[in-house]
Amino acid sequence: MQAKLSLAGALLGLLCLVPASAIHAAEGFGVPISDRVIVGTVDIKGTSVTFAVREGTLLTLEDTDTDTMVGLSPAITDESAGAIAWLPLKIVTTTGGRQELQFIPLKNDEELRVDVGRPTSLPLPDTAWLGPFEVASISPPWRGFPTLPSPGNALESEPSALRAQFGRSSGNSCCVSCGTISVCGTSVRIASCGVCQDAGGVPLPDRQQ
Image 1 (cartoon, helix red, strand yellow):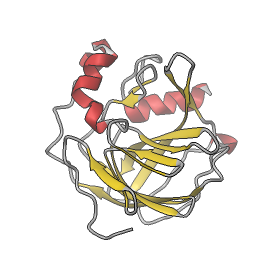
Image 2 (cartoon, one colour; image 1 turned 120 degrees about the horizontal axis):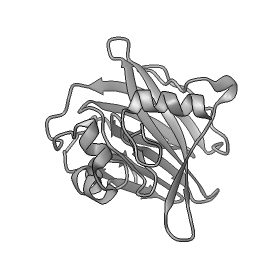
Image 3 (cartoon, rainbow, N blue to C red; image 1 turned 180 degrees about the vertical axis):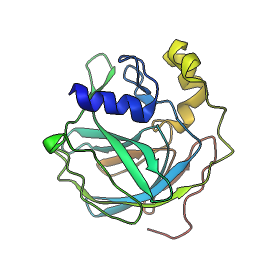
């Protein structure tokens, strides 16, 4: 839907297949738009997952039982109010191994909002396996990340070059799997199955899920 894709361009700033966006469909990663990090939890099939995702990059949630993977890319619209808009994407892997990102339109062309301290059920198709999704906090800019590119440089760069610079904070290199579920983000913890952090070393809350 063109209206929502134009919103994605406004929220995310850059892009590859569609010239005003920051998600690279061929590579399946997002170019960050700031050093701020959103920290939260999501329940998947009764398993609690703690995540951190850098603004503009991808949090990916996968269930192999249903062969479904979705991506969520956050953009902070009002930090003082804890307001966050999330770009919802369906991620499909082709027979050639290419990841195709398909925008998921919402009912009445609504914006997907999950704000700090307001748990919600994600209104996405084919995701009955997803439970409550909650944002706990927006962190101050995290200084361990590599330098952000200018929009011009990002648009002119090859996906492989951007992956080399930002891949560790793009929601694909830091992944934790647990049974039939897999979650990728800037940092991820599933208490019974493991924890990972990207090269920036974003810490997760100390509490155990």
